[in-house]
Length: 299
Image 1 (cartoon, rainbow, N blue to C red):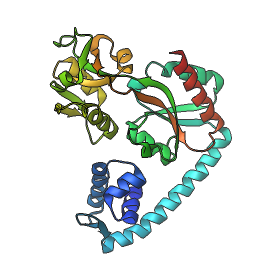
Image 2 (cartoon, helix red, strand yellow; image 1 turned 30 degrees about the horizontal axis):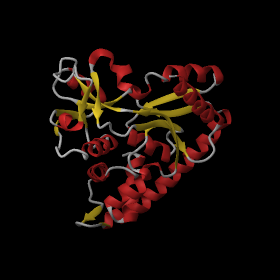
Image 3 (cartoon, rainbow, N blue to C red; image 1 turned 90 degrees about the horizontal axis):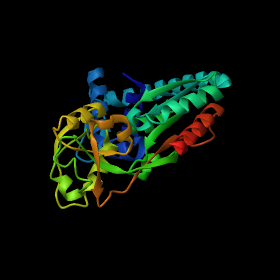
Image 4 (spheres, rainbow, N blue to C red; image 1 turned 180 degrees about the vertical axis):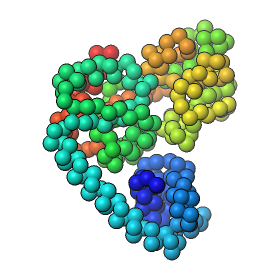
């Protein structure tokens, strides 16, 4: 059992609705939240919630567990605040969420500049999906995170976000694909191809972008396969099993493994940037933010 299970259960109990808790309080996908609650019930071996079509209510066991969950979270929060207060005196560690493929070009420059400016601060990088990094910022497990700006503005509630660059959306194909020699591909033509994409459950923001882009066409794209990680998607496209959506930063990471083709009409660029909880940054976090901006500006 993890603390996030308790936080998720508390939110659902207070909202009496899984969908509203997911959307308005936790900012996670509803299927993901439902799965976490089921995992908690399976681990405890009891049913905590009575479910109806429109709402949920606590069972007797759920009401008892709610009281204990609140106490545990209060104690955990107090422990975290105490430890961070001690650590912040020396500002010795900085937790940063990132997506390797999006930051590959700039991260070495950031780390070199930061190490020179703040040699006593240890950077801990967390390779998390976009949505998980946003949650990590809200619950203070992360001080900073590199993220794609979510398609839904509410996902940035309580967070500060600054755009580092705008990423153009491209069609990724194998170098041997029949479209690879074309300089551009229409959205309608692309929609006729079998797509390999990241899973809806693990990468809901990617799914929302994908859906919004092809909403402009009358043809619904055929999704051949959904995978759990980006390396798998790249390998499947390279093997010419299908095509996929990518952005400019793929070009630096994958080199000649894929061809990135311009889409017409060109989809709206996606903002990639750095985020933190709202409020004053620590000196260590403020310096990292500055290094990230300088690195992005030089690329």
